[in-house]
Amino acid sequence: LKKAEEAFEENKLIKSLDLYNKVYELSNGKNLDAIINLALIYDSLGKSEKAKDYYKEALSIDNYEERAYYGLATIYDEEEKYEEAIRLYNKAIYINPNYHKAYFFLANAYDVSGKKDLAIETYEKLLSLNPMDFWANLNLGCIYEEQNQNDLAYKMFSKALKIDPNNHLALFNMGVICHKFNMIKKSINFYER
Image (cartoon, rainbow, N blue to C red):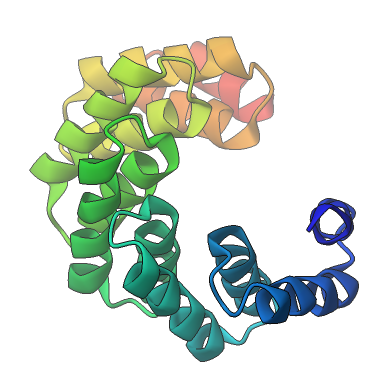
């Protein structure tokens, strides 16, 4: 198991896959970490159906395995099956109310499926747990900007730029907001940066 984990951390996926399969065999399919990591590797290799099978197997062993719900949700999210992804992200969060990644991707799934109010609520919850999440600040600002809540957008983009002052997307979005406020020179400055 330790060698499999080391290979995975070194991004040696095939070696890691082989070692996790050995752990799986030796544990008679009962080692949850091996099952979850097999799912992760298969997903990384573009074999999402096989990954789903392993996540479901993990859930058959432990119905409170938040990593399996999250992993399945990310696959459904990539397949643009947002309702199923949302359901599974929520299950992961129910089990682990501090699951930052699940909140982030849940908010994004709400956003892309047109549920802007739920996206805002979820990003706000994530930011209450981790105010320094750059992407949550930026994405929430984008939603506010889309809704013409420009004061709130400006605030979120400012926070994002405090976290990462040179990120091109945050600079661009701040340029957009400054232009909306008719601060043309400031807008140009952000665009040039």
